[in-house]
Length: 403
Length: 64
Image (cartoon, rainbow over all chains, first blue to last red):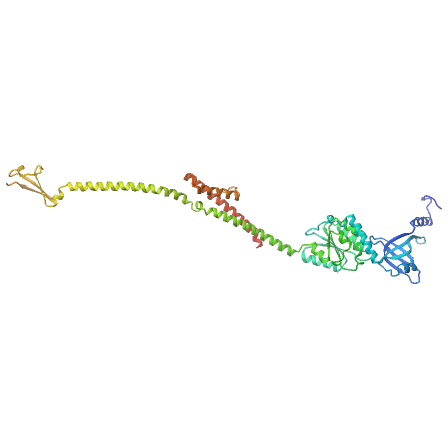
C-alpha cells in the first residue's frame, strides 16, 4: 500500500494518491489567515456555511467551510467584502478531490483595525523608501499618450477625460477600465497599471477614482498595489477620492492629485495659457531686438551727423578758405601794380601832352618857321622877302616877310 | 563692396575714422581717403541694421 514509487507497470490507485494528498495537506495544520470574503452562502437548513476567501492583493482564493455557530459567534454581521481573520486548517474532501479550509474561529476585522494596519504598513513602506521624494519622477510637460486606470463610465473617468481635453484638445488617452472596489479591485488595478507601464507609447499613468467611504478606498492603500506603482517605470499620478483622502498609493505615486479633475490639470498644460505665454514671449523678444536695433541706429546716426561725415565738403572748404586770402593778396598786389602802371602812364601822357605846343596853338598862338623848319624867335633871323611858314592850331599858312 | 565686417567692428572703426578726421591732421589726400573709408563703414553699419530689421520683419510678419 505504501510503495515509495509508482510506475506504468505498478500505478497507484486513486485512493492511494488521494490519501497521500490528504496527508500532505494535513501537515500544514492550523493557521491564522487574513483575507476578504468574496462570497458567502448560508444554505437554509444547513449548519455549514461556505465562504470564498480571497487574497485582497492577488487574484486567488480558497474555499472555507465553517459551522453556522462559528460564524455567529465570531462574525455575526459578516457579509461579502468583509475583511476577516480566521483560524483554520486545510481539509481534503476525498470524495470529490477538492480542498477547502475548515475554520473554527472567524473574526471580523473592523475599520479601526484596518486603519491601524494601514498606519503600520505606511511606516513600513516609508522606511523602505517608497515615499522618498527623491525617487519621484516628473511627468512629461506634454505627454504623448496618457494611460488612465479607472472604473468604466465613472465620474472620475469623465472628469479626467473632459478636463484634460478642454485644456489640451489633442490629448491622447489609453483608458483601461478596472474594478475599483470589492475583492477583485486590487488585482484588476495592478494588472491595468502593469499593462500601461509596459506600453511604450504611454508616458504617464493616472490612477483615478471618485470619492467613496474609507472602506471603498481601501484597495488604493493595498501593499501590493503600492509596490506595483513604485515599480512602474512610467510616472504615476494618483487621483483618489476627494481632497482629504490620502490612501497610501497617494504617497507612493510620483504626483498626488487631490481629485480626478486636478489630475487632468496636472497631466496636460492649458493650451490657451501656453499660447498666451508664447505670444507674450515672442512679443518681448521682438521688442527687445527692435529696441536694440533702434539704439544702434541712433548711435550710427549720431556718428554720421558729426560734421566731418555730414558735411564732407567742409574738408575741402576749409582748405579753400585758407587759400582764399593768398589769392586775394596776389590779386590785390597785381591790381595795385596795374593801377600804378596805369597812372604812371597817364601822368606821362599828361606831361607829354603838356609839353606839346598844340595846346598853346589852340589858345591862338602861332609858330613861325622858316621853310627849312627853323623856328624864328627874333626878327633879325629873317630878311625882307623871306618865305615863312606859320603853324596855327588847325593848320599852317605861307607868308612873306615884308619889312 | 561688402566686407565681412561685423556691425560692431565697422562701428568701432567708423568712430576711429571720425576722430582722426576731426583732429584735422594729415594731407588732403589722406583726409579724403579717411572720409571715403568713413562713408563706406557707415554704409556697412546701415546695411547690417537694415538687414537685421528685414529679418525681424520677415520673422514677425506671419504672426501679426
